Length: 139
Image 1: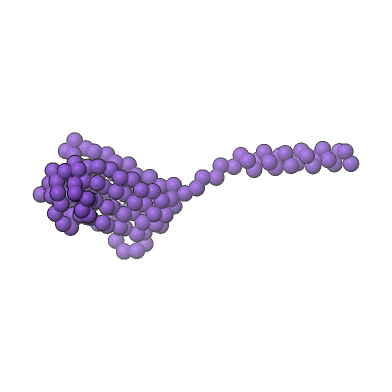
Image 2: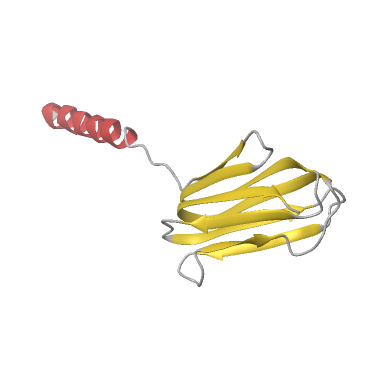
């Protein structure tokens, strides 16, 4: 009987030890911004099913901006690019959703904005894959 109790304690300890060693990570998502010498922005997004929002302030001396965004290997979720001018007016709100239409968008912000400190927000929702974006001052 005593030997059975010792064996049971050892078995429970071993199960506890090995089950606590498992590292379970939840879904993640991230975005990086890189400002190049001309003042343009390049960035990358990546995720494994997570959601993420990041905002960046960008100095745009012009009333418009050229943009490009794409999802290159996305398996799910969405990538949204929001841009507001120096007065907080929305000048762009575009979203790419994996498996639903286009996998890239580019062009010029839809309306003229106020030059100055523009706010660029990246929103990843349940994003699973990779993508990129770029911004440059418009004409």
